[in-house]
Image (cartoon, rainbow, N blue to C red; front, side, top):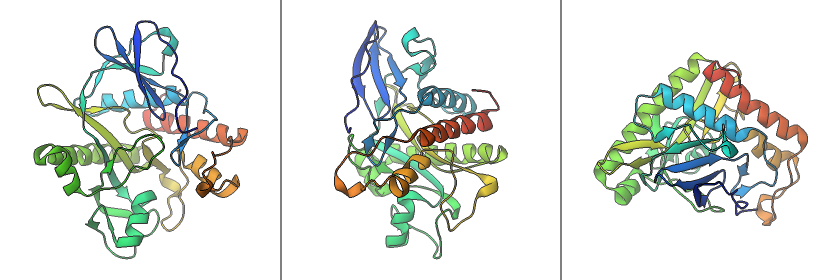
Length: 289
C-alpha cells in the first residue's frame, strides 16, 4: 500500500500526520509526539510486512546519536504514553525546512546513478573511474526534495536549496549536514562500521535557531556497511534495508515497473532485516537491545 494504515488512537494526543514509517501527534502541551512504527518502506511503497521491533531500534538509535552530537535537537522528553513506550519521543514543534539534507562519503544508490549519467552528483563534479562503494576524498552535500508518500525524492543542486530556503539558511544546512556526518562517520569507523551516506532533517525555532529533527543516523536514514567487508566495485553487505531492496529486486520476482504492490516479505528476510538493525544498534552504541 502507498498510503499508511490508520494511526492508532492515543489518549490525550491528536493525530496530525502519518508518513512511511512515523505517526505524528500533537499533545495538549503543544509539543509533538513522534511515534516510530514497525512499517518498512522500499521503492516508494509501504510494504504489507512489518519488521518486528524496528520502531524501537530506530528510536533508541536516534536518542543515542542525539546524546553524542553537539548540535541543538528537537527532543523534549522520552516520557511517552504507555501505548507507544520505547518507540516514541516528545519533541518540539518546529518550522521544518522542505529539504532532505543528504551527506555522502561513499558512492552508492541514487548518487551512483547520478554519477554514471553525468559524472557529477547534484551538480558536484567527481573524479573519473569511481564505482559502487568508492570512498569520496571529501564528503559532499547532495540535497533532495521531500516527496509525498508514493513519489520519489529527487536529488537537487545546492542552488535549488538556496532558491527554496534562502542563501543563509542553505549555507547553514550544508555546513551542519557535513559537520554532523563527518563526526558520525568517524565514530562509526571506530566501531567497525562505514557510514556511507545519511540524510538529516532540520527545522527552525521561533528565534531562528536551526535544530536537528526527526530520526538521525539510523538504518532507515543511512547506509551502514561492515568495514571489514567493504569492497569497492560491488554491492556492499549492509546493516540497513538494502536487504529488503535486494530481495525485492533480485529474488522475489516482483517487477518494479508493473505498478503492482510488492509481495509480502519472506520470514527469512524479515528476520535478517530485524537482526541487521539490532546488530547496527548494538555495534554502534555498545548497548544490548
